[in-house]
Amino acid sequence: MTSSAQRTDPGRVRRENEDSLLAEPETGLFAVADGLGGHRGGATASRVALEALASFMRSSGNDPTITWPWGFEPGVPFPAIRLKNAVHWANRRILAEANLAPELTGMGSTLLALLITPGRGYFTGVGDSRLYLWRQGLLRQVSRDDSWAASMLRAGATQEDVAASEMRHALTRALGTDSDLVVEVEELPLEDGDLMLLCSDGLYGPTGDAGIARALAVPDVTLEATVADLVEAANAAGGPDNITAVLVRYEQDSPAGTDTAIP
Image (cartoon, rainbow, N blue to C red; front, side, top):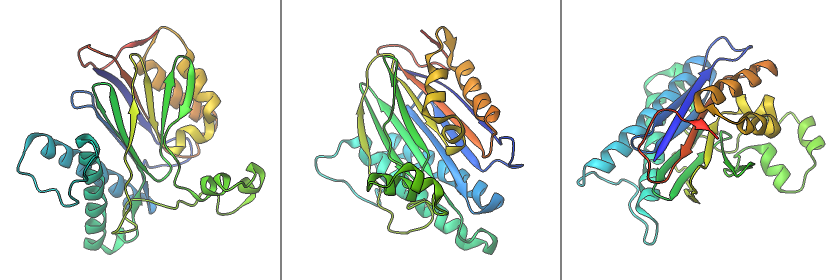
């Protein structure tokens, strides 16, 4: 049903990589996390986030007796409930880890998680890591940034005013910052051949949406080659931050795999 390729890179400026990624085509679970709070804290937060996410999703899919700490919601699809509970669990685990070591105080992470089921994708985002959809030659950002800049733009501010502000990089939500984190899961109807890109701001920031679209538009290349091109484009544009990309292709009625060509 899905095939994927993924890569993470420290970029040209940062010595360490605080990003983490998760790609499980066999279960349809994919995620990107961008750590916050200095190298040790950021790297720990992003790693803990994805470990907790994957652990809960595996347990909830295989064990009917698992406890659901954040409960069920009438009328909400079961995959969305699983993903929502998993993100809450990841947030709790980061808070718990931070309490164990003073040097980890204040650590946090963004998270963009995608769960693919037949004909549907379920996704959730906390922070400014993004989910893009490439369909029939058109690129669309389907996630919404939790950032000061994005909130100001949605409120009507100009790009120029936002770019000039010292607050332009501030996040309005992140894992590990609030025990009462609000988690929203959205549904994405899928079509055969859809490409979905999960990425950290170290990719889309330097390249822009136009750069991403150029890489995805190249015909007859593998997903692995496209991911490599995306990372190289971000580095060629200065590579100011850690770069992470997970590229997923949805295929109806086809076996799961690790790579495929983009037609």
